[in-house]
Length: 359
Image 1: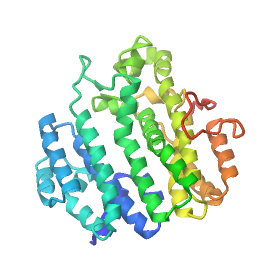
Image 2 (image 1 turned 90 degrees about the horizontal axis):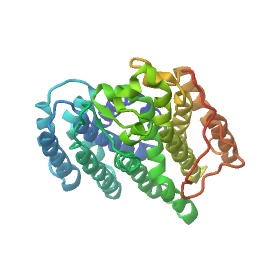
Image 3 (image 1 turned 180 degrees about the vertical axis):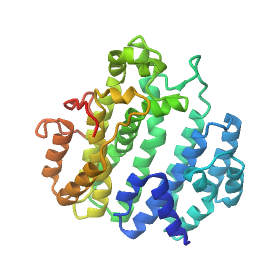
Image 4 (image 1 turned 180 degrees about the horizontal axis):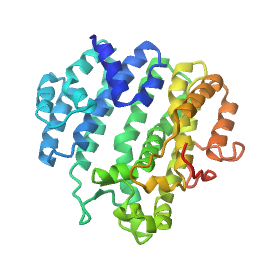
């Protein structure tokens, strides 16, 4: 199997949803974005592995960074991952890091430099959070909203910057206004998608010993993070996550401006941005006020048929800014004539209409 084919298969294995918009990109961008995403997943695999001590993670992150930034051969890292217990596509990916680097090798040096810069920034942040100790309740948790902001910057805002640098270079953007809008909203694009994952994965994260709903927000409602899952505390649980929903709303509103800053003629890149955004906005509305968010085993997600409908809608309207604004407003419950995001995200953003049923 060639390196490019390997990367396509691994991308589908670790994120079938993300593989859909990536496949729409022009060949050069598809290759570099796929490789960049897979490198990010390797770092994520090290951060999340439950059987690795902080010291072991330090050693793996150090090796990973020497590969990504310093050009060290990746075989040593891959061999080290063979000694990490467990199976699954994420570990298979990490153990085959050389193939990802081989797939990235034909890409122009400037693009490889962009990938190295931002993947390294992400990995250093993940390494920092891998030292967070568990509390008395046994959960490793974020502390405050500021802590949540910093975490989201490292794991997702960096991706927004990585994509922006690649897009500006690949598209040869010379329109200063568009470039400014992209750079002004780049972090929010990544952060918005990450916050949606946090909101829909509350129970899954707690099952592996983490809470990304900050302790501060729980304490304000008289809760500990573990109490979010207690059926008799549903009202307080919904109140505790409300600020995270509000922050996600602001970020997703800015993410719309990010997508619209892509020139309409760059249809593939616009679609790449619009598809995950549309799915994220819809997922937020499914999660908002939905008790399933706090019920282990229940899923907070949109159905496959609806995903197909969203994809076709975006395909049909991706060059029409006004129709896109109206469609976004319809999904999110915002007013398209009033709720346009400024270049700097506002302190408050309108909330949707509070869908309470699962798709």
